[in-house]
Image (cartoon, rainbow, N blue to C red; front, side, top):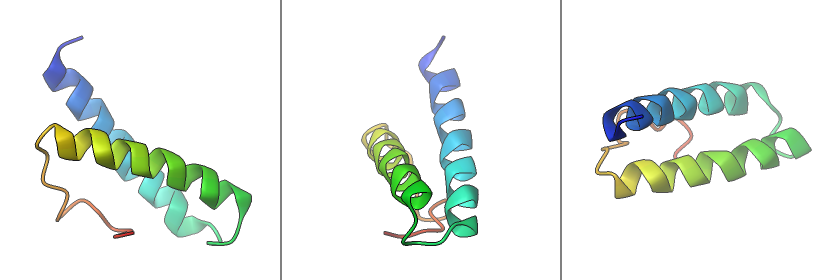
Length: 60
C-alpha cells in the first residue's frame, strides 16, 4: 500500500470516528475509546503534513 493510499484511509477513518463521537455521550466508555483512536489518527495525519483545520469537527 502506498503512502498516499494510507493517508486517504486515515483521513476517511478520522472523519468516520468523528461522526461516531458526535453521536455519543461525552462521558460514555464508547466516547473515551473513540477519543483514543481520534487522537492517534490526529497525530498520524498531523505528522504526515495533513492540515486538519477543515477536517477536525471535534477540536479537542
